[in-house]
Image 1 (cartoon, helix red, strand yellow):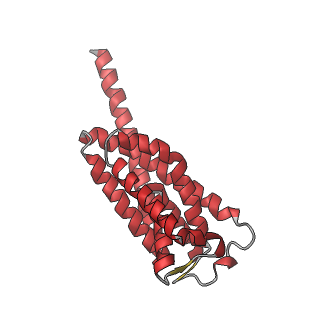
Image 2 (cartoon, rainbow, N blue to C red):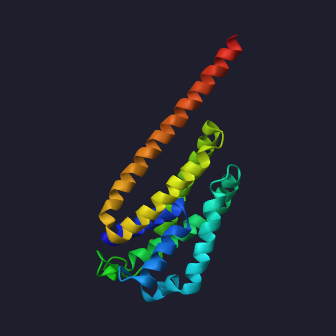
Length: 205
């Protein structure tokens, strides 16, 4: 089951930042013995791929910290992040790591399954991030965008590394993510009721 946790952590990380988990896989594969990518995914450790991912990451990190631009970036990333999540799940769940020695035993015949699962997971996290950011911008006058973005980037880095090195801790991240989703949906519901109540009071006056 560590394969699933590794893939899940990397895919969720891609939902926050598409390039961090892919870059983590590439760098650790190329410069360490912590992960051994299977033959179909060795391209992630190619020097040019790493450079391209690093450049894209730099652009993403800047764009995501500027109000309004971050919204446009989220629209563009609606395709990019799920795609990256699928790649990250596929590569991570089929790699040998410090905790996974026989990854092929779990996804033995259906190689498309982990990619599809990764796409869905990353898309879900991306939707939550995209829905939360306008709320942050509106309630802070835009000043919260760089803070929220930095926190998301840091979370993506931590979760990516944890998914590879100690995947059991990914469960804690998933619990936190579900707790945030519950709080966010409840908060939106409360705000909607408050607006409806204020509108109704205005009509009575």
